[in-house]
Structures are given as structure tokens and as C-alpha cells.
Length: 104
Image (cartoon, rainbow, N blue to C red):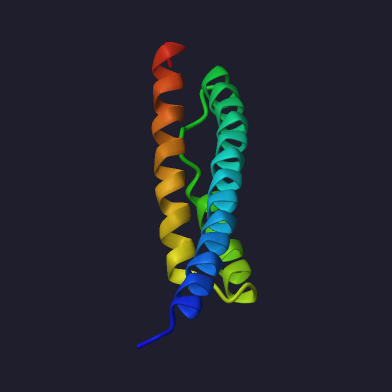
């Protein structure tokens, strides 16, 4: 059985690591918020000019780019693709809503 000092040290390290994770989570949320500010601008521009909400060619290019970045970063490319696909679906939903709001 581990000694109390070993457990206490492990708990201290666990707390420190979790603080780092919490900081990264906060940064991810702030970055997603920034990303969505720009995609809202894209949606408004598309709606104003009657462009479709989705751009399958752009999405394909982005998936390829992010899969490569994931590989370089030692992150599962399939996970990166799922993550991007989820974000893109939400962006398209926003673009469709913006188009409806603008009567397009």
C-alpha cells in the first residue's frame, strides 16, 4: 500500500495537471467563440449575395488540412475530422438561419 506522502504528492500533481486542463478548456471555448464570430460574418455575406450556406469543396479541403495537422500533432486524425464535422454542421445551421432571417 502506498505511503500517505506518496498519495499526497500524487494528489497535488493531479490537481496541478487538472488546472492545466481547465486552462486549456477555457482557451478552446474562447477560440471557438472567436471562430463563430467570423463564421457569422461569412453567413451574413453569403446570405446577402444569395450564396449557399454550405461549401462542400471548402469543407473537404478543411478536413484534409486538419487531418494533416492532427497527424503532425500526434492527435488521432479521425477525432479531428469528427470534431471539425461537428463544428461545420453547426456553422451551416447558423448560415441557414441567417439566410432565413434575411429572406433568402
